[in-house]
Length: 73
Picture 1 (tube, rainbow, N blue to C red):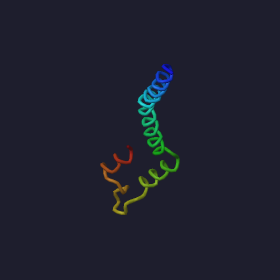
Picture 2 (picture 1 turned 90 degrees about the vertical axis):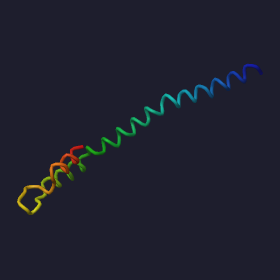
Picture 3 (picture 1 turned 45 degrees about the horizontal axis):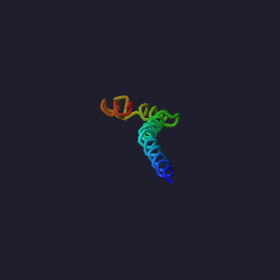
Protein backbone atom coordinates (compact mmCIF):
# COMPACT_ATOMS: atom_id res chain seq x y z
CA UNK A 1 0.00 0.00 0.00
CA UNK A 2 2.91 2.36 0.66
CA UNK A 3 4.20 1.97 -2.87
CA UNK A 4 0.84 2.69 -4.48
CA UNK A 5 0.96 6.34 -3.48
CA UNK A 6 4.54 6.65 -4.74
CA UNK A 7 3.63 5.04 -8.07
CA UNK A 8 0.60 7.29 -8.55
CA UNK A 9 2.56 10.45 -7.69
CA UNK A 10 5.38 9.37 -10.02
CA UNK A 11 2.97 8.81 -12.91
CA UNK A 12 1.24 12.15 -12.33
CA UNK A 13 4.59 13.91 -12.03
CA UNK A 14 5.82 12.29 -15.24
CA UNK A 15 2.67 13.36 -17.10
CA UNK A 16 3.02 16.96 -15.88
CA UNK A 17 6.70 17.04 -16.78
CA UNK A 18 6.01 15.62 -20.25
CA UNK A 19 3.32 18.26 -20.80
CA UNK A 20 5.60 21.08 -19.68
CA UNK A 21 8.41 19.93 -21.95
CA UNK A 22 6.39 18.99 -25.04
CA UNK A 23 3.84 21.79 -25.17
CA UNK A 24 6.33 24.47 -26.33
CA UNK A 25 7.56 22.07 -29.03
CA UNK A 26 4.00 21.47 -30.19
CA UNK A 27 3.24 25.20 -30.34
CA UNK A 28 6.45 25.83 -32.28
CA UNK A 29 5.56 23.14 -34.81
CA UNK A 30 2.07 24.60 -35.23
CA UNK A 31 3.51 28.06 -35.93
CA UNK A 32 5.96 26.60 -38.45
CA UNK A 33 3.15 24.74 -40.20
CA UNK A 34 1.14 27.95 -40.49
CA UNK A 35 4.19 29.76 -41.84
CA UNK A 36 4.79 27.02 -44.39
CA UNK A 37 1.26 27.48 -45.73
CA UNK A 38 2.34 30.92 -46.93
CA UNK A 39 4.75 29.17 -49.30
CA UNK A 40 2.36 26.77 -51.01
CA UNK A 41 2.16 26.83 -54.80
CA UNK A 42 -1.29 28.40 -54.77
CA UNK A 43 -0.24 31.20 -52.44
CA UNK A 44 2.90 31.93 -54.44
CA UNK A 45 0.88 32.04 -57.66
CA UNK A 46 -1.65 34.40 -56.06
CA UNK A 47 1.12 36.74 -54.92
CA UNK A 48 2.75 36.66 -58.33
CA UNK A 49 -0.56 37.50 -60.03
CA UNK A 50 -1.11 40.37 -57.60
CA UNK A 51 2.32 41.80 -58.36
CA UNK A 52 1.93 41.41 -62.13
CA UNK A 53 -1.52 43.03 -62.29
CA UNK A 54 -1.20 46.47 -63.93
CA UNK A 55 -2.64 49.37 -61.96
CA UNK A 56 -3.87 51.26 -65.02
CA UNK A 57 -1.92 54.44 -64.22
CA UNK A 58 1.22 53.38 -66.02
CA UNK A 59 3.15 52.80 -62.81
CA UNK A 60 3.61 49.12 -63.69
CA UNK A 61 2.15 47.65 -60.51
CA UNK A 62 -0.76 47.96 -58.15
CA UNK A 63 1.34 48.03 -55.02
CA UNK A 64 3.41 50.71 -53.38
CA UNK A 65 6.78 49.98 -51.78
CA UNK A 66 5.24 49.30 -48.37
CA UNK A 67 2.61 46.96 -49.76
CA UNK A 68 5.26 45.05 -51.72
CA UNK A 69 7.25 44.59 -48.51
CA UNK A 70 4.17 43.16 -46.79
CA UNK A 71 3.72 40.64 -49.60
CA UNK A 72 7.26 39.32 -49.12
CA UNK A 73 6.71 38.54 -45.44
